[in-house]
Length: 340
Image (cartoon, rainbow, N blue to C red):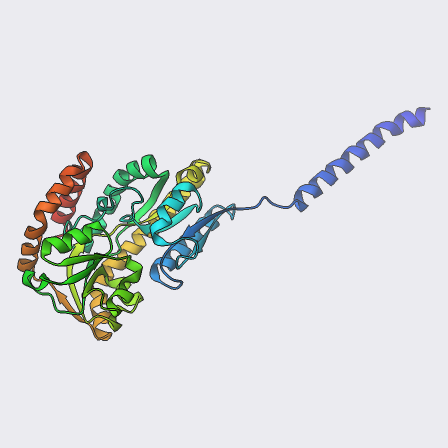
């Protein structure tokens, strides 16, 4: 009996140690939780600068969250077409998107693309961060999403089958306009707008539906518009604000530290792309000319005439936006003063 009394504590201790060892082994061998996958749609094709930028963002974000959160990039409209993108983010059909802020689903697209508002790409880039807070007020309230970072992709310019160097050259020109702002600009300058999706610039030029389109020089090169147009008239027609968007419900469910990482990396990616497009202002001319296109930079004096022609529309637009329009004007004036 005495021996059994001595052995009992020893047996209990052995059982406890065995249970602890099994538990530890179970923890080490346990299957880790599945990572949170954020699907990011982007209209540009694989290999494009914008797509690569998104993929680099995805890699850094995954590394910093130790793989617990991952972004999977879907280029070339694989998940959703451009016009439906922001609504898809709003509804949570997809979690993230990289898209131009001119595509405001159900809202005035002119919020982000007021014609001839900025002097150049540097002024446009300088306006991105000050504008982000303004746009997010609308995005959060109306569209259940937020902009994580914003950057310029340069301006929309006139890509034409005919030379356009003066206001008189706009008369009778059929221009593919990808949104109401470029349509209004075309009308103010004396042309005739034809509303088309920006992804269909090539086909409309090829078929002769339009004489020219208003689009970026980057898209001109990506989509091969040099095959169907000869002239590039650069006058910084409408600014561009590309953005990394996320569904607001998805974002709010993330731990605060993960939210901060995502915002930091989105702005890092945005700043990198802004720098690329500032540099591209010089590089694009060489590339476009090597493709057989004639690049014409509108002289300052002539651009002033074009600004005057569209001034009443711009003033009316900004005034109609109330306090938002006043703030946009202030941001633009400051950016232009710093980047003449």
